[in-house]
Image 1: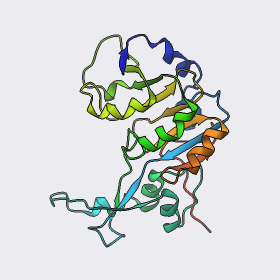
Image 2: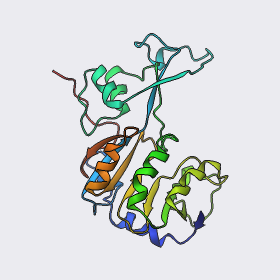
Image 3: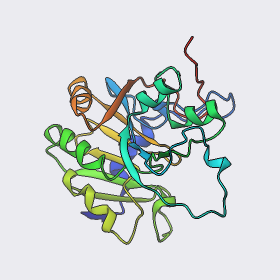
Image 4: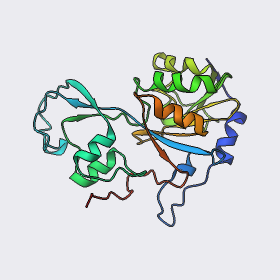
Length: 241
């Protein structure tokens, strides 16, 4: 894995994504982060787990004593769609963990995760396994400046690395950056992944076969969306009738 200072290979992301319309308050959408060249889009939900220490599912984090020592006991994984069903919420394209927050007025204490700003370390190898057959060429991995440990001038787009897709798991041992990249994409540009700041899911753009392969992996909760799907945490939440 090599860090490169020429961002020419990142320019397509800038050119093919729409700017966020802040003035009209329409929120951010998939097309603001993933280029519009793709035929299929998806949200890869970051895994969440039950805390086996907590039996009362009605308690929110905001109701806990901030001075009390907190311990976690990671238990069974629960899918986001099952969490939506438990609270009788519509599992729409806009659904995310923030939907639970808005409905309850806080995050439930018995839930651990999902990871924000980065893909979950258990999700990464599964995504690599699915996308590897569609790649076959070197990939690029971009980090926003907020995820680098040492600021350098003239790097407004952060740090950019070039390497094999399977090398992405090595980033957790790097001293230059935090966690996993914001953007991943192959040299062929036939797919793209993005995890944004404050995102607890990862956006994907690619083709139908890639989407079907992601959906077929039991370890990946993959929700098909479209490029106009809203992804900010102010998206509407609808309770089931």
